[in-house]
Image 1 (cartoon, rainbow, N blue to C red):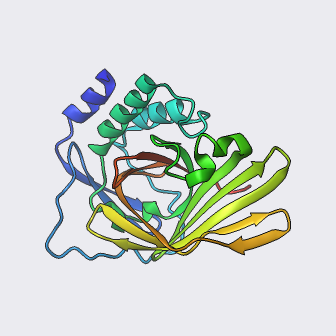
Image 2 (spheres, rainbow, N blue to C red):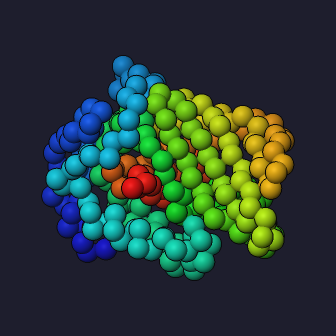
Length: 235
């Protein structure tokens, strides 16, 4: 962790960087507390901010956390000490959190869920120990669309030959400058030629602890850590 400590030691000033949708401000070494006039709504921009730059972004930390979680079945194959290392890197990155991340245009776009400290948090029963025996996850995607739409999708192969997907559509509400709440409609299941809706509404609360043009980190209300990697546009 020596490299992350050296990055944080010099962090004392507030800077800003521009995206094609607006400006995000970040404060080295700490994040701001909620302001009295906080507007509980995400940016109204409509395009994905893939051209964002931050000259002092903690790129070594970003590369390190991705190297530890990619190709791990979203954290399932990691050992306990490896989960601890991921949590330490996430804590270090949190020191570089943008001011008011829920209003930063960087949150918009399509994201791959590449890690969760609790494997059943994303995907529910499909990702439980028993569920993973019958359902092999092919993709786990979250799309955040302006101004307040969230779409989750888990694509899977059932029993190794039958393709399917579960999708959730929800609306996002900003609770403060870091925390969001998403209320989802009942899930939709597609398997083979069948398509139907089941269950009821659900809701989640998530703290955005870090976001840049490559990754987004979140912490659920029960402490689960999520790492999202921005999907690259199709060529």
